[in-house]
Image (cartoon, rainbow, N blue to C red; front, side):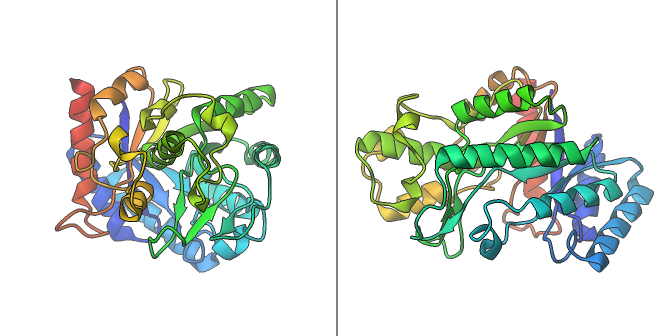
Amino acid sequence: MPAFSLKAAAIDYGQLEDRSRRLARLGLPVTLELHTFGGRDVDSQDGRRAALANLARLRDAFGEVAPTVHVPYQSVERVTREDFDEAQVERSVAFAREAGAHAVVVHRYWGLVFGDAPPRSTRAEATAGFNEAITRLARAAGDVRLLVENVGHYSLLPRDGRHILSGPLDHFFPWEIAAFRAHVEAERLANVGVFVDVAHATLSANLFNVRRARGAPVPDRRFDWITDDDLDRTDTLHPFDFVDPAMDYLHVSDSRLLAGHEWRAPDEPLLVEATCSEGMEVGTGNLPWAALPARLGGGARATLVLEVEPGPGDSHVSNGAQERSLRHLAKVFEA
């Protein structure tokens, strides 16, 4: 049976208390991934102070609390100008130390562009640049672990297929994960791990399968970073193909996986759904959760983070969908 973690904003004590109360009621350790905003918390002296006070108050109420910090949302203006925001990760690591957190979640991206802007980097350049950045950050992070997460597809509001960020490292396909692990091993980065957000992997799998089924380049920026080399690796991709037993951390939510008959000619509403459906309550999408335990080798060493948006009757403070998703997955792993 894996461990479970819920997601809450570090700056919002109501959210922290709600998730902690739900975990305690289930007899589980209070393990939280802290959502951060940047200007409201890790990038602001007053915000950091308030977030740390929230955590101190939480520990007074619930005893031991094990947090992980997720870096804030990337600034579109900054990451379309710079290749990668290392300073943001450094500030998040500093906040993690203050918060008593053991790890920081870092998105894998490089050289992002907005909309129809031309690419700023090749896949090879981006891979090398990100690997070098993570190596520097990891050696400075000391005992704080860096957990590298797949992005999948950056769709911005409004969800219309045009307001997007894209870059050479969009997908973190299974073969890219293997190559990144080889880099981590070669550099002896003991404090770097790699993990998958299964909903992000669904977005990547959907795009891959549509591109593969069409058999020709697609004049659509959403498909830019599925290369011929990627297409030569496999005939189809499933989001659970990105998961393996070496992963000890996972972001979990439901999503919309396109079926084979939908790959060849999806209309625009379906394609938007295929690239934007994530954060859904487990059991409300169509991912085959019964197959997940085998992909994780039983999952005994893994922590599953329920990164789930509020459901009907919920709010961002009182998020019952996270607890219901946890219960659903616990039953799957018990079966």
